[in-house]
Image: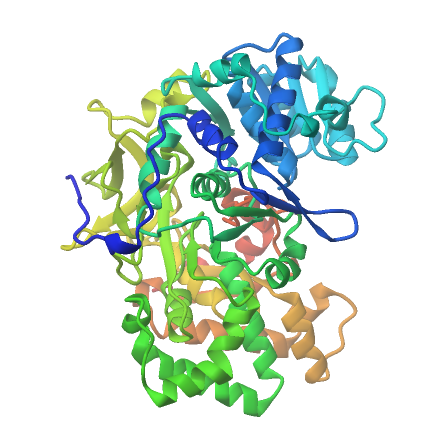
Length: 614
């Protein structure tokens, strides 16, 4: 079924941005923008330094010419491994400018994992950020066909590395001059040409290279942000991993709008960056917002008075959620008082100037969305996949439904398979998995509909709701299907819970593994006189078990009987990206978690045959 927007933004305030047909069109727009501060980045002293539109053009040109001099040609693949920084964007644009295909790789992967992707993509050139990344790649270089490795941190390049500063020497001195030969090469790229291979994170199996064309990404760029009216007065912080399509798409949107992009290379620098940059646009995965909420609740819990004030303000604000989502400011004197005492403090945690908050990359729990709406902040949740470039649907100021994954973009078609799986068709849908024709064939039906792997429903107004990943639904031995993510999100609403994973497929009842927020738990333990020599001893303490038991009981109160968590275990590890339990977008790697906790899960179900179950 084809879905169209039921309302449009105010045309008097809408900025018209010419459509693009390739990412190179976007780059040409940057070059013509005459923006003295198109990008800002932090130097070694923590000072924010600007990069102008002219500097971006000249650095892209210089790097692209170096690639050409090494024999790189249209269609060649070039690996890009690094944190968020201006060099990442310059490399991206330089690869695409010459018609090559970039292969962004998460810097958190191991050397063996990186080597496998570089080999699969047949990359002869790689660009890495740091000495650490170089050493990791260089150690497995024999497992690849790499001929050259460029390093962004160029102060003392190690043997075998080429300093990016050497390649960019003299580029800035060219000022605003343009090279017609290079520009002709840039314009020669067509929408059908491949732009990037983005390897999926492999939450359930072997990573696959998602092949996206310039036209795929451009078609999404032209539509996805039109209701937000981004313009040259806006700024955003680029902190989500650029190897993930969500972060990269946001940066493209900002560049295309003439807005400023501030690069934050490490997540722990984000709070300081938000205070200093004071962005107007923030796109984060749900975990970013969950952490802000947990921080607010944890701080207020230190004072009985502050705790009561926060509870009062959230309770008061819950009556104005619809008003907040409609973009209106409540006129109630009590709401204004709550805004001064509480809501403004929450907004200040994001820098105090954000006008657009977007959540993507993973499902946003309804409780989190409602909490932020109750403190005056509308979180615009979107939904999409790497394979769809990425946005499929989005809540916007013009069209929204709290709790939904948004309204489908007007250039995509959606329908539901008989089992409820969401199928998508449109110009942003990828062309296939790199060198995997069988995997490609499996994810398309006979009519060309892409199988998303997500179970969904569409309401009478056309809003999309995602239930869960099809492969992650738990089926009890009694035949009941349980969607784990909504329940896990309810558990994570508590400041003491960092992550939760439901288990129980093919068992009589559902159980939960809970990974604590150890900062909050250890603080609670100190206040209650609990001394433990290790985290394992801490989570085994009867008082801690009882504490988490109360959290589970509270969540169970709003669940159907077959969904309720009959048992749980608090594990002594906080699951992280670095330790391997999470993907870069903070989704659970369920296979990893269940494998590492096999003994714990077996214990949960040891007496299943004689237990009451449901």
